[in-house]
Image (cartoon, rainbow, N blue to C red; front, side):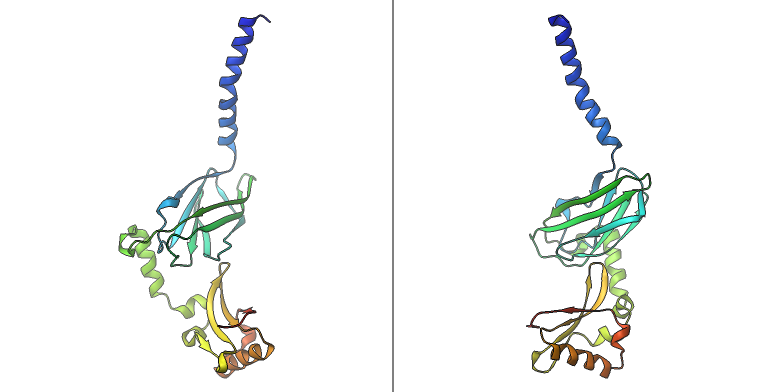
Length: 214
């Protein structure tokens, strides 16, 4: 091969390599965008839409956050997953979301894909209309309906001597009654109080937080 032909071959390779890389990437299962954009998430933004290059499978879907900011998520269109947040966020604080596993309907898998954002403060009236309407609908939804028990209407409750705290929270997308205490006595006292209010602790979603209440 003479120098001219060699030079032509190199030029062709230089052109084809990025083209091939683009074609390969475009065929892969990936995140294609967010709505709102990550730099436009506010302290009161109730949800984020994550868009994908292929239709998302319901059977392979797990999204979470180390800061427990995810209340739930669902597929709202073939290529879009909506992630609902526990709000409000703290202003200018870095939050992370992790797509633990997201599968496409054609069998491709995206694992441990993470991204972060720093919310900014805006008035809720400045949110898009759809988000404002969602916030209003959530305000109208009774807490007892969300958590499955009217006990939440009596919470938070602080035990005598500050030995325990009973509250409610959404943790890893699920609603729980939380009992915060670092003693066996505090745990038992909390359960006794719940029973005294007419509720069966064994029928409640309870999570124990092993630390001093205050």
